[in-house]
Amino acid sequence: MHATDVTPKVWDRIVRTRAGASCLCCGDWSAGERAAIGLYGAMIATPGTCHVAAQIGQSLDGRVATLSGDAADVSGPDGLAHLHRMRALVDAVVVGVKTALHDNPRLTVRLVPGRNPARVVIDPSGRLPNDARLFAEDGARRIVIQTVDVPRPPGVEVIRLPRDTWIAPRAIITALQGKGLHHLLIEGGAITIARFLEADLLTRLHVAVAPLLIGSGPQGLTTQPISRLAQARRPETQVYGLGSDVVFDCLVGTRAAPCAWPHAAMSSAALHG
Ligand SMILES: NC(=O)c1ccc[n+]([C@@H]2O[C@H](COP(=O)([O-])OP(=O)(O)OC[C@H]3O[C@@H](n4cnc5c(N)ncnc54)[C@H](OP(=O)(O)O)[C@@H]3O)[C@@H](O)[C@H]2O)c1
Image 1 (tube, rainbow, N blue to C red):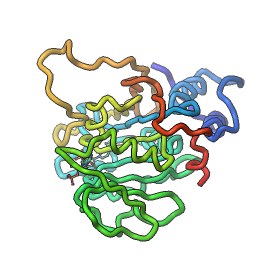
Image 2: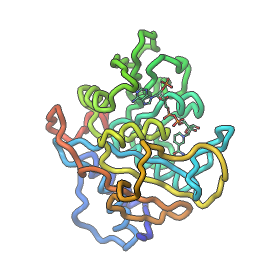
Image 3: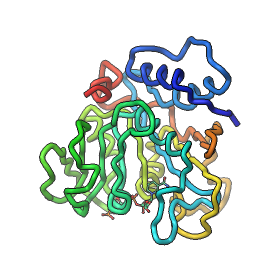
């Protein structure tokens, strides 16, 4: 396990590298800082590529909330800071409507220095009220993906996509790429992440495990059943100790896929816009 020390100095370098203003290839780093570069440097895709990561925070027994839906403190303080760092490194954060309805998240970067990403909610039936916090005007782009014609607040971009059983995850990524959003974090919940995983569209999956036993409540990722362990995914995985939580950084796809829409710069417009 890599003991990780995300000092202000190394985080600043990572953020500036993400913005295209620095690099990670040189510097005098401690072992813990080098681990931070390993963990977060892998989130920085090269120009002309896309990166779709997912992150889920869970307990030792694989739960993401209590039976009544309390999910606020599953991750410890370092796990939460990790989630905010992940947000700071992407163009857009994507959540399913059940998370938006239940947690009313802001999806901003508040715990670490960094830019707020665009916020995307997949809400096929238009169930999310227009006063949801992720729709709040704060300078970040706000996008809703829906199949119905529900009016949204001024400034909220609406993507209409058809639905079969699900809206095709590839169509979601393609639509977001078309809006200049190439580096995505699928933040949950488990239903939403599972659709992207099953479609083989994730490059990385971060499973952040916190040392608590909930004992009941919704499980983390649940995908199509398999009968034999030989069929299980066994991704190449690095393990990072973050203090209160342990992050399993799983390489579930190619590191970065070519974008459907070539772009010259590493999405600096979304980072600075
Ligand atoms: N621990 C963590 O890391 C974490 C993170 C996020 C959330 N949570 C917790 O997880 C729970 C909610 O997660 P969840 O897994 O139940 O639900 P979810 O993933 O938040 O939302 C699922 C819903 O989003 C819509 N959706 C997502 N992808 C879709 C697609 N490809 N096509 C069509 N519709 C799509 C569907 O809405 P419709 O139902 O309208 O069809 C679907 O039922 C909450 O308790 C929350 O607190 C935990």
